[in-house]
Image (tube, rainbow, N blue to C red; front, side):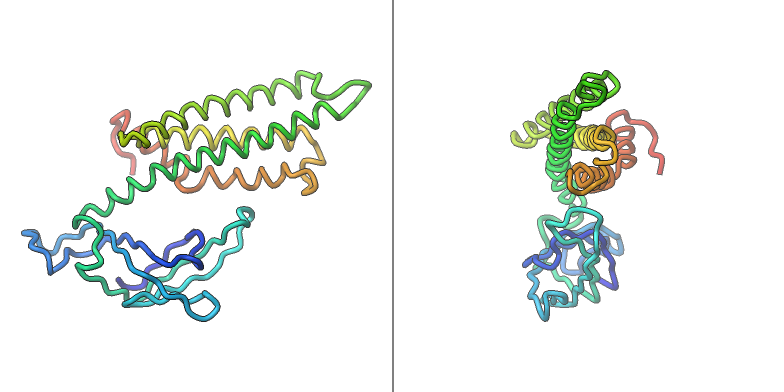
Length: 253
């Protein structure tokens, strides 16, 4: 593997094992009748940490990480990952040759379900904060939550979170029962990320100026939920997947 860059590697400084997915030539050690064909393969290699847990050395080749500062998700680190001249052999192959992309997709479905659950949790925390504030904040002799301009958007945000949870639970049930769940996992992530963002945005709006202050937490929820519309896959790519693989429309890219 020549110089390769991968971004947004979570807890890259702590990992003891690295899984690499690469588009490469077929292994010469295999008996494949097709030569010179590029395939996606998955490899597994242990990593030994060196000075200050910044440089991580594979058995064969170098892996270097550089920490990236995020707006949120401070509980885990995010890194840029550089791989230099990593040599792989048949012994490092995971599963069957050429099926690395399928293995990768199988791992992405539970990740989408997990992210959907995270989004719903953040959205609910934001709504709870906003509702509590709307009950306690008195303006013109009554709580601001008594006004429909405050109450209706919060009710709408709450209802969308509930709907997103149903799709998330459906996707999780399918995955637990070893059934295909790609469309459901993608839809769960799509709807949950949107619902969470709307809930957090409404919470900030409900608290007004206080919503922009760190003391009241909702600004943090807003920062955290925004990333869920981007990672682990953007909303646009989810829509591409649904249109192509569920609706069977022509591929757009």
